[in-house]
Structure formats: C-alpha cells, structure tokens
Image 1 (cartoon, helix red, strand yellow):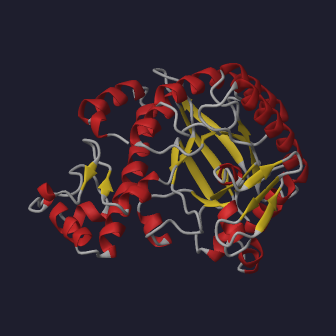
Image 2 (cartoon, one colour):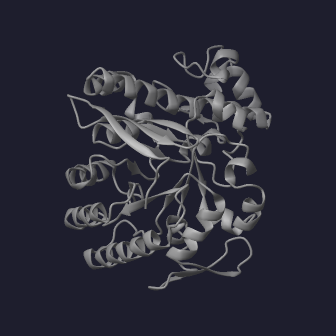
Length: 376
C-alpha cells in the first residue's frame, strides 16, 4: 500500500554501537527516534492532561485497541472524530492490536485460526477479535500507526508452542495486511518466536519479506531476565530491515531504554512510569526513589536534582511525600509528570549521544550514578 504521508529516515548510526538516530514523519507531526512513547490505555495517560503531555515533550502516545473496543467502543470514538479529536491530542498516536491483552486473559479466552474468543473483563460478555476485526477497530479509532494482531507466548514456553504461535502470527499478519486499506494509517508487523533464536530470526526474516511499514518486537519483557531479552534483540537485529522503524513493545525502565537503543531499537513504550508514580515511586538519576518513605519528610530538595519537570522545578520531596501521606491526588499527578518527563528527557540525551558517536560512553556515565540495586 502506498503511504504518501508517512516516511522514516535513519539520519545516523552511532559509531560506538548499533544505535540509530532517525525521524518518523507522520501527518500529525515528526517523531524523533529513539523515542519513549507514553501509554494512554483508554485515550488518556493516567493523571495527565494533553496539555501537560505536550509540555513534557511527548511526540507520540499509545492507546489500547482491546480496552477501547470494550469501553467506550470504537464506534463512539469514530463518532467523536477519531482518537485525535476524541482525546484532544494533536500529535501522532499508535494503537496496539489487542493481541497482548488477549494473551493476558489466559483461562477466559480460546485461540483458534479464525481469531480469539474471550470474555470481557468488565462484564463477562463473550467477545471475538480476529485479525480483520482488529484492523476494523483500529481503522475506526483513526490512529496513525496500527499494529498487526499477533499471538504472544508466556515465559517460559517450549519450542513447539513458540513455533506454533509464531507461524499463526505470520498468517494473521498476512490477513491484517490484506484487510488494511486506509492509506492515512500505516501498519507494523510484530516479530514473535519467544526465547528461541532460530524462531526469532525466522520471524524477523519472514515479516521483513512481507514489507510492513515498520516492525514491533513482541513477546519480550514478559517476565524473563533482562539479559535474555538483550540476547534476543542481538540475535534478530541483523535480520531486520535497516530502513524500517523497530519498536520494542512494553519496555520502559531507564536501563532497558538505553540498552535497547544500543541494540538498534527506535521506539519503546511502557505503563511503568505512571503505574509506579501512582504508588509514590519515582525515577531518579540515582535509581528508584520511594517518596513516601519517612526519610523524605524533611527533604527540601526536588525529586531529582537534574530534572527540569514542573514537579522538580516547584516542589520538594517533603511536600510531595505529604501529598501522598494525606491521600491527595496531586501527589500522584506530580510524580507522573516527573516520571514521564524523566524518560522523555533520557531519550533526548540518548539521541544527543548517538549524534555525537558516544552512546557507549553515555551508558557508562549513566551507570556510574544509577544504582542498579534500586532498579525496576
């Protein structure tokens, strides 16, 4: 399919690593890669307004096909003018296919070649999503980037199970590609294969030959140790199209963003930043900080002395701790603003390091201060 309003260009490859500096052009604006993409599951990033998302430097956000299908329904979103107008977000939006959410419903779903039958986690009603249905939902939502409907496997799983899921993912990818008819949206395929290098490589090659606009890397960050994830990335990168964007799905801790970029990943997303913020946990240059702890009751410094976010410019750890202890929702909002800005700013630093051919040096400098015993 011709996609006249979309393009991706790799501007530079870091001489110290496989990291790439790029730009993804879309009708709703450019995305500078590598990029962290905040997750707005139900057409909102929890505790955040679109204006605040713009203020912290967000260039693209995600919404969730499965959850929006259940509530409020894609027809209502389409009636409201599509996701951009519905949620008043002027920049690019990526929608996932619902495949991972359906995978997580083990026990109340049945996977067949036609698609997946499952029970709604909201009211128990019987639902069905196939590759074609997923495309129809995402067409109605009107996102800029759509994801193919895939089959995710658990960690650990045996080779036969992983291979079966991979081949079905490829067949479903072809069905998604055939059903995708709207040139105002682009479609990414998703590499699967669990934790077997031979399957991962086969999946990368098969999907590359299908010529999707971009490629997600799914089925990682599902409970495996991080070195295994990095090993899988290193195995598949030589077999992925160099001129297409690469998206590592569901990954968003500071160390994983740096390590993923080093291995050639262009796009990342994760709910971690806002999820932990609502519990009073913050990213800092020194590692994890639990701001509800008693030792911060008289701490008049910012959450992170290197951060430029609204929370760090205006409020102390002591004040934000007070908000959490008092049950004030503003505490969760300030922590969310900080965590999201921390990751977006981290990726700004990563891009600058790639431009200067010093990403490995940047990683080493980052780890000299970042306490991995306080990691996520």
